Length: 361
Image 1 (cartoon, rainbow, N blue to C red):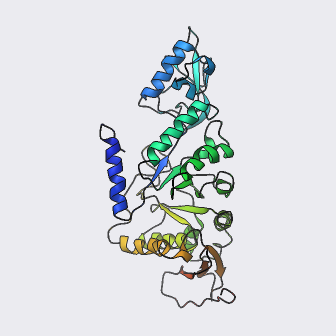
Image 2 (image 1 turned 120 degrees about the horizontal axis):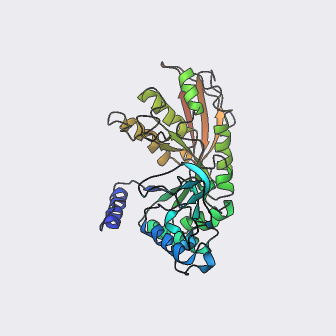
């Protein structure tokens, strides 16, 4: 949301406008660290400088209790209030603004040398609970948790009980995990879905499209992991980065494969695979264009309005007249009341395809 006096109203107005147009709103969320330039952390530093780094000696209401502190220098020095340090360091960071009684003090950081919230602290857990209440109270339909395996002192049980269960306490709100990239995100952490791979990873449908040969698609770990997630009541979501493939036709085929094989489609609308800070996320672009958007919408609508094509529906690959050129899968809704068949042509020209659905009902 935008900053300023109308920030909350601007955000809730946006969510309401999206809902009025039939669009659900899911937000990316990282409840693992605080920006060094925030007033909250500056108060924490002031309290450490006054009361010391031991949590029990700090005032009960102090945000200093949210973080892990030690006497002694760290591996690096706190970045400036508008700066970030190493993307992933997981080490102590010297904080000159928290010096206590002439002693050097450092805080623990996992991401970008920013102070990590400590889930071993009941005060931090209470604070995050209030943050979740704030954002979920704006009408969000889901949250994607950024790298939940890396939260400080928060194992899978902690992620499940403190974060995911909180989201699920709001009716019809989904909790997604950026990772772990296997079924443990659903089985152990309780997420409704987790991402399988990074935005720039080479997905099996990319090879099928480039080689015009889908024969390795069914045996890929991507499909195996998808089925494991579905088997424990979860959903797999797959990222489509339009910059990786060559053109709109290839991207539409990739989108159709992702949806048709039973994955939640997450489009990272980029024009490059890296952005100015060299991260994997890419600069935001304008894909799909207005010309391609109707075809793309038809793909997503097929899953949205057909229970047999929803990400939760089961899938069984079935033979075609040439599995080196074509791929087909029968989908069955979770209530077993409807079926659909998705057929894919990976050749660059029109083809005649036959499918053997014997035994599929």
